[in-house]
Length: 414
Length: 119
Image (cartoon, rainbow over all chains, first blue to last red; front, side):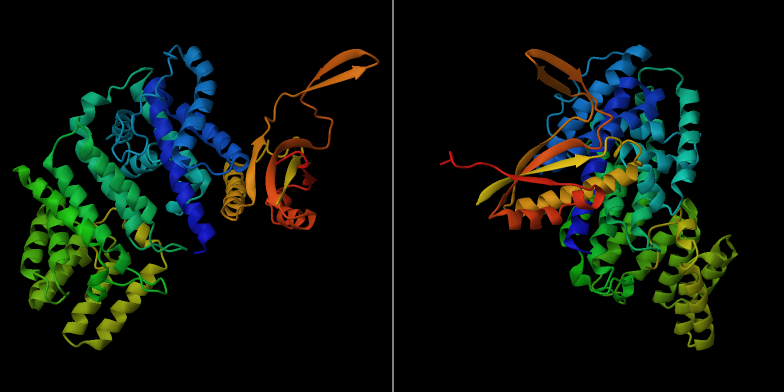
């Protein structure tokens, strides 16, 4: 990556953040039935702001500048629409923002997130909507993220917005504050999936999309910081995302190739992130309720504590996977459970658990499944079987397997 | 170090039918260039002119006439100007050559400011 590429990427993130913030602020004024209008106005405003930038030079505080110029442009454009729609056109929302670089979610952003996580929409549509509106990804950026055509993504988004609109009707105000508690599990799930979308190895130019992971982290951190939201499980989710993020520096070698957890140089792990994660894991114990995020964060914490792959507390990990398989059974959970059993020396248990995994749909196109088979075969000295399993895994990598399994767990055998 | 003004004209409809992604890429190139020039101490500042509107005030035999823009009949309109630092016209031309405006448009007009009254 050249330095100009990295500047572009940083700029993209700044622009996205501000676009998301603008959309949320506008929706809070225009009402939930006008998400699309808010998106259009925000995008126009951002483009207008950016077109001035080259002439004025890059400001000392690009974010504050962008927000101010774009907000003014948005206000200009939306006043007319607001009058036509009969909503309040008192646009003082710009000056009420005390700290423009706060990591926490503003109330409008939180509202919008809750609005996007409508249980009537498919999970993928909720994720698309959240990325597009709350996180400010353009249609082209979201499409690239999911390896879709921009047109296909836009059509899906339009359909999702129509569905939202048909339910929120012409309400000028959010009904979502009431839905907050109900929808919180879904909001968390979408943040989790967003993180996975950036964290799991991808085909294409970028192996990971750290920017997408950061966005998910921002949302989970923002939820914790929000006075309106309570719940220890939020801390569990945030701890999980932090534990996973802490390994990021060790997940590629200098050639940009994937390094799996068992091979990683643990000295490269981000100790600050791990320390933060442990604090959140402590806070997650405040509730009696044990969610899948508690279990997954627990597993991740055991990896974080282990000095080596071999010296990992596999007994505790396999117990946690067993619990997870009851609460949130999935292909990846069974696969990882099997690996932990294998590391414990329980080959029969591992074989049985892998057989369960293999009976699930999509197992054949899931690289993690074949990699686990390969490990087990290697363990028992069956080189022929190991080779076949590895070839099957490699065949998956060139398919859309990673996409298909995005709904699977994070704790892949990386 | 002398100051030079770079005037950046473009076709009147240059940005009207541009796709969003294309426009963003174009802006990123411009912004990247400005960052680069700012880091080298070459960029002084500038102004973007509004695409819409514009007036021409003329004195025809003692009568002042005012004409409204836009001036659709002209081949190019001025999009804005930038002020740069350069030792001489040679350097100013070199800087203009590297300008993304030369990739996306056709013309840059360079004029040196008259600094004789400056300190």
